[in-house]
Image (cartoon, rainbow, N blue to C red; front, side):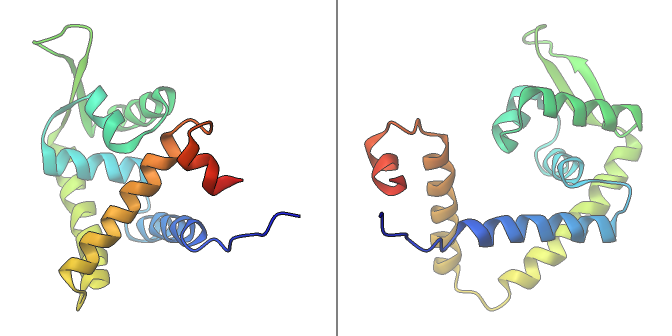
Length: 152
């Protein structure tokens, strides 16, 4: 029988992500987590092409399209052909979208500020490095020796 390694990160990451979604639902009931995060991204980064949103959130393309469709139908975003590449679309915030994005951004800023209060900046940087490593490993093919060594 294989010795089991206790999971130290995965359940905590999942639980925190789920609770962030519930927090968003309580604070801004008309947005789900994916919608809120996309609005926040557009609030911080400005208009973005769909491929940038895909890289930022790693949604399946169909999922991202569905989220963008909902935001557009509610008048929160615009979708225009890119002047640089007519095959891609630029996603921007409408006036109503800017107001909603600013609101959800303030909500998530308060949550993050509370979580970071009193934390050592180096510890936060190390935590972010660990999260990036989890992302990187989860994207790799399971035949990769580093990933395989840790999974069985």
